[in-house]
Image (cartoon, rainbow, N blue to C red):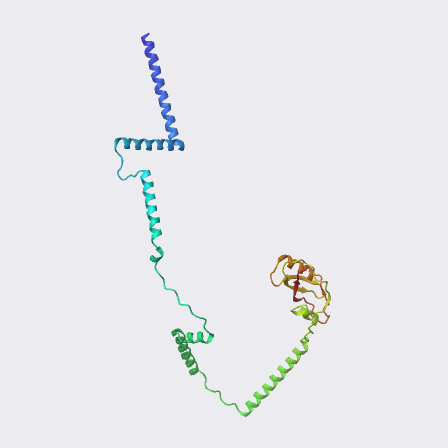
Length: 277
């Protein structure tokens, strides 16, 4: 009977030791691998050490309670506000020298001021020295040619003059005569090569409701057959008005170019006015 009791006690003791080892292992694993458990244990350890230090009188002298810190900060802020209200801190700021205002001077006064500067005088002196050296290096006057050489030179000059005159006549023949500017195009405000090209078809201007009168200047390119190829705004304005003006100008028709004239595109600028209805 006693032996059985000893065996039961021994088993219970071993069981308790096993459970204790398992509990310790679980605790160590949780402490090492679970951050929340670590944080909780650290907070509990800190509060425990604080309470123990306060109870046993082991509190550090340089440590100030949180409430006392808050009171000190409030007192300091209050003192600073009172000092700011009584003292004008702008008077303590340093005054920097301000540049003098220079009145608008004429061009002559500016040039006079520039010429009086030492840098300009130094450049002028160096320029005079350089020109003096160049004058010393100039070759002497060439010898006077003889009568035969002079006659040859005169003949060469006459031939050169004749060739120049022939070239000028050829250029004058090849150059086309300036085209006549049309009054109708001038009244429409057309500028560029298109000012001398006749308009065959021009619809009535578009009727658009606008709050403020506006003028859109457009640049157009016309093909040799008189059709409008493309239109772009010369000066930026309202996008919708630019679109309407572009569609309107693409309906224009100009006279075709003559066959003896270069078959190339011509451009021009045309203002389109949008008036209040």
